[in-house]
Amino acid sequence: MSELKPGGRRINGSTMLGFFMFWLAGLQDLGANVNKNVKLLSAIAHAGITGRTLARRAGIHHITVSRLLNQRGRCRPQTATAIAQALNATPVELGLDVWAGGPIDES
Image 1 (spheres, rainbow, N blue to C red):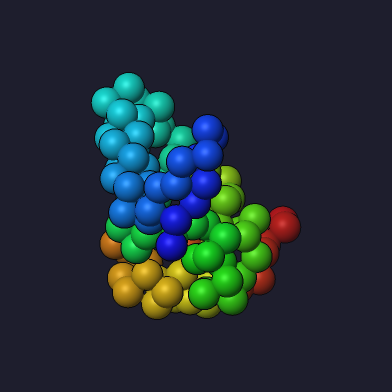
Image 2: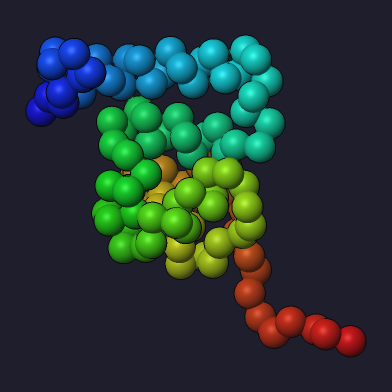
């Protein structure tokens, strides 16, 4: 599969993945990944998919994937399991912060 680049040239998925991995390495070098889940981000890149594709495969909303990538909260155990299965990994390998569940004590 190829996509149209600005200027009318086409690039294939392998080229896009290579560019993304180069970009990700640059983020790590600059320290810009402080608020990013780099483990999840690199697993998505390694799989050669987008966050929306991951969401579709895991049966969750794409905003949930975005929140987890940007470390904006925890996820339910079922969500972590679905994401891990879609990426052939474990929630721990993906650096997912799982909410333990149960009732919330408001006292």
